[in-house]
Length: 408
Image (cartoon, rainbow, N blue to C red; front, side, top):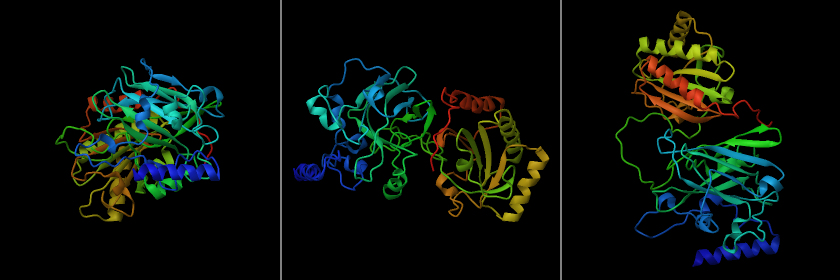
């Protein structure tokens, strides 16, 4: 009761000062405010969500995999959000998942019109639904939202996700990497990455902005029902962003530097091949040749990195000489051979990758900075070479070669 009264007072104050569309928000993170706290013994998947229940107001009986909002015709900036919805493994397409979205207009307001249902007016008229098809595909054509007036919350799009086999819906919020307000927001509140990275990275097709965004069901969703599997863990999850880090470059294009793989070569595809405390050099050499050949044949859009993180008997000069010798022996051309003192090293920030140093290897494949595939203990066989090649081929979409907007 107190929470409802407080919210009403805040809205009233906002209206008196100026109608800003703040929806009762202060400088508190809206993402945090939307979580409903409950004393019920039965846990709500996702922690609950204030406002997500409005997805059922005006929901059509038949929901398609593509939806076009009023903003597509009337907004200042056309925006397409498209991608696939995957099961928790990040690889299996999930069908019949309903995603409800809503966002502000060009003025940063949740403005409504005569077509907006009375009960859903607080979400405004820029709202709609998509349902993933047999292959997990979805597409939203709308307008890019504006940030709230006189506020520090960045441009964002709200999602409410309803799976067929989950009793309640749960939320995810999306932000834009070229929004100057986002970095301050991230620094203050962190990065939630609910159901996938929270960042939309747009490319340009004429006057249309396009953001490819995959949804990973249950990822970073509290109390999500998953089977407990005793699998070896290494690396971040598919759907999360590949973190920046600065290894020492012993051989390759950036030799003698500490260039960050994802920062310098993050626009298209990247492969980071991690090996820790248990190296098998005969197998490593086979992988290095394969990755180098792949970097040559896909030169325009692929950069491969080998990151050696053996903590045993570490010596920087000896490690550098060791990798340089292997690079010359194999006559490598494009792949970068790098190293760090260990995978728990904080100075290089390689620890952010959460690599298990005891496994034989960890392969992380990312596109536009987001992890799209991952493999652990992968042997250098023809079948696995094809597996990696296919992972790269299947994620070269129609928008792959489109340019990015200029931003800092």
